[in-house]
Structures are given as structure tokens and as C-alpha cells.
Length: 164
Image (cartoon, rainbow, N blue to C red; front, side, top):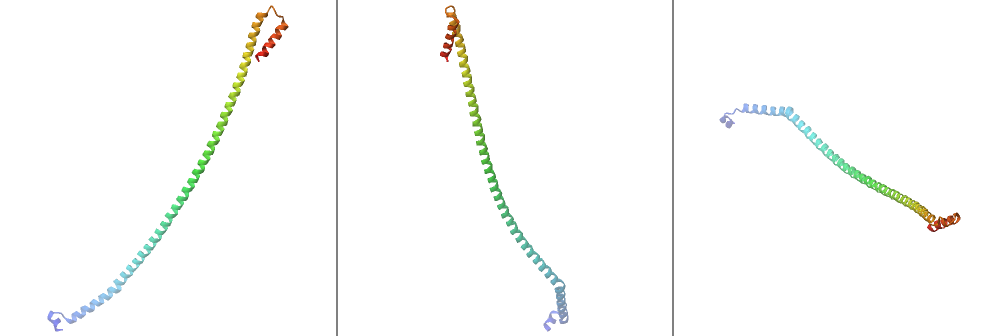
């Protein structure tokens, strides 16, 4: 104690200050430290809950992305199937149109051939008539005075038969 007196420290004052300090620490502990610890603990729980929620959200996002990829893949496959069916239908229709066009072309060719044959037959008949007319005209001129009407008529018929 003498040492404390040598430095000018009063032991009663030191004890009173020590008691005051311990009281202050006790009061601060009760009023300040416990609420701060409670606040820190609540904050830690909120952060932990936030991390759990973020992890759940991340998992849900991952699942949603996987589902979206699967849906896109399925949609792409369906689109490819639709395109394939459309191509098949287009090819079938194109072949049908080609067949129809070919049939129409054959029909047109057949009608043209028939018309040509008719015109050819008509032309041959006209040529025969003109030839017969010429033969008759020439024959009449040559035989006008020499042959009678019956012989003339028989001669014309024979000439026509030979032309056919």
C-alpha cells in the first residue's frame, strides 16, 4: 500500500473507481451488450435464412432452366416433325400436279392428233373431190361428143373408185 501512496494513488479512491467501473460494465452489459448480441444473432439468422432462400431460388432457377431447355427441345422436335410433314405433303401435291399436268398434256396431244387426222382426212377428201372434178372436166372435154350419158356416168364412178 505504501507503494500506492508513493505514486500518489489513494486506495479508497481506487476501490471506488473499481466498483464504479464494475457497475458500469454490469449496466452496459445488461443494457447494451445483450441487446447488441440479440441484434447480431437476429441479423445472423436473417442472413442465414437469406442464404437458404437464395439457394432454394437458385435451385428453382436451375430447374426452370432445365425445364425450359426440355420444352425448347420438345418444341424444336415438334417443329421439325411439322416441317417434315409439310414437305411430304408438298411433294405429294407436287407429284399430283405433275401427274395432272401430264394427263392434261397427253389429252391435248391426243386431241391435236385427232384434229390433225380429221383435217388430213378432210383434206384428202377435198383433194379427191377436186381430182374427180378435174378428171370429169377433162374427160368431158375429151369425150363430149364421142360418149353418151350412161357411159359417161360409169366412167366417172370407176375413176372415183380408183382414186379411193
